[in-house]
Image 1 (cartoon, rainbow, N blue to C red):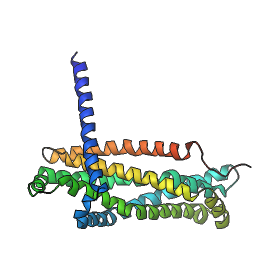
Image 2 (image 1 turned 45 degrees about the vertical axis):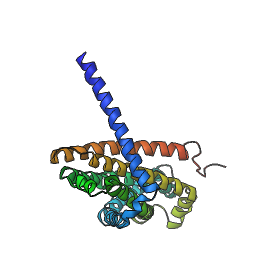
Image 3 (image 1 turned 180 degrees about the vertical axis):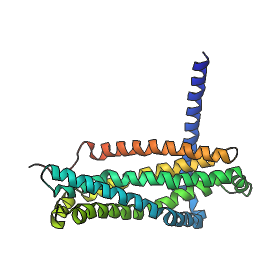
Image 4 (image 1 turned 180 degrees about the horizontal axis):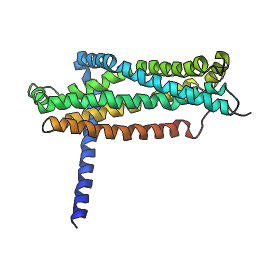
Length: 268
């Protein structure tokens, strides 16, 4: 009986936390959608600048490394079937549809979201959030909505740069290092196996992942209670939720965008 009671309490607490998270998410998104966040325009721009200066290099490094991996795997897989130029198609599909969005989601979760948890959580335990409320400021608007809008402002440009870096990594391995395909043969299939629509869908996956991890980071940071130990525990919990959410969004996005119609120019 005691086990059943504990299970009941855990389930109830989980539902309550989920509802609380949805409520805070609604307040955060509402502040952006209705334009109230613009009253803190300078903070929005500061958060965007911090995101670029503090996270862009790390994200690009991760994407470049995974682009190298795609180039290696694509080159040797193409060699096995006697069609080395297929490495270009492998890079186009892998980098655009899966690798770059996932790398983006991983690094946002590890670098950006956990940073938000630590920053906002520290403000919570040192009573800075309460001080904002005492001064008549909407703390959710100032701390969460500004970070979300700042992310949305820089995200498209950051993602395009990351995508290019991933492409460069795959090209360097397949064409320059291994030399199993000529540049012309590589790009012939590279451009045939992607389209502007695929780029749009890939960007939508990345935006969804980044938005999710930012909202998770803001929620866990804003709801921290206790001392410094609780900030660390909230950071760990946020990372777990982020990893689950990133994979869920990636799977659902791939199925919705390419599951029914992969749009690969193969066959007659």
